[in-house]
Length: 247
View 1: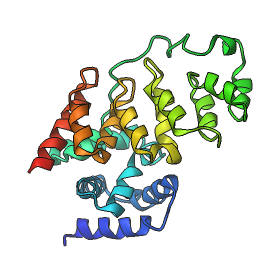
View 2 (view 1 turned 120 degrees about the vertical axis):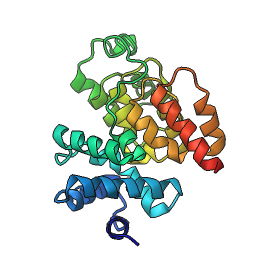
View 3 (view 1 turned 30 degrees about the vertical axis):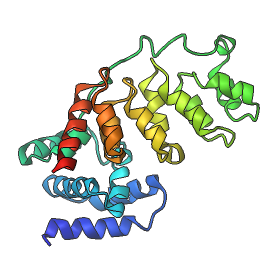
View 4 (view 1 turned 180 degrees about the horizontal axis):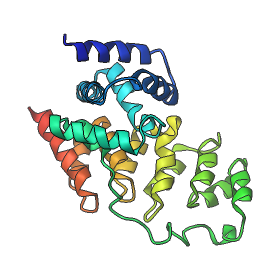
């Protein structure tokens, strides 16, 4: 076992003690913070490659990486340095994860006009409050809300069901920021159908869609690869995974 593999194994073992994705991301940030960029990139690459083999501890660590990239440690300069190293070392998985690409479809004016007409003139603060209600009729009207703060509150509502979350992530056009909120919600992002719906929505940021591809069954991966409206980066990543699984 190489030094990088040993460090990555110890890191993943440490992370396995945290059940929450955000806690794993926070712990991972702390462990990576003092490393040189080259070593950091090598460890991330090893985690990504082990996750492809469905190694559960590495898969959990991999699932924390997008949250990690929102942390202060990974500022624009650090991300640029990591992308440079990943490109030089041919760390394909790391490079895909760090890509800053716009969604395939960006709705005009943040999908203005999608909200329920009855909520059009309701203030943001009031809509956030309504998102916590037990009134099912009101909850259904909020599913098309385009403010990520409203969706964040809605996703925490215990009355919300998976079928309703699927309506949120399947809406087209929609705001990429709304889809990011669903992805960052540990409860709903863990659901297989939610993962697949996020990948299949052209408004989903490509970095999120590519990240989620590893969790798909082979049949669903084939289906996603044939979707015409997805970002080229997502389709290429799907084809790459299909080739690897055939080997």
